[in-house]
Length: 150
Image (cartoon, rainbow, N blue to C red):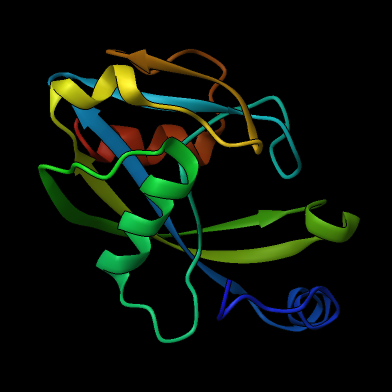
């Protein structure tokens, strides 16, 4: 896909500057979606969909792309910017530490899309929650609370 960074250059970027990513709190009614990560960082943790912003891509386009790539969802009711967050991972891509600036959005999907979700290979499971599960990574918990979940 165009605008993707070659692996060698991506490794140099991770070594030297923060990544810019969109993170998405997917909502349907009074529930939110979490994905179980199948890879580092946050392997085996419940997480929210999202990923790197591509060169020349605006935020709404990035959110829609990540919804399609990670969940196979294209019907969206609304997209709302929530907050700017940050994460430092001790071990991620290439087994190296890296720093991420996250632009967190709330995306509401219609109920008709719930059963159409098909997660990508970066995740091993998905589940809808009405309350924040115990043991969730503090970053995820913080922004779910900011989105109004308890």
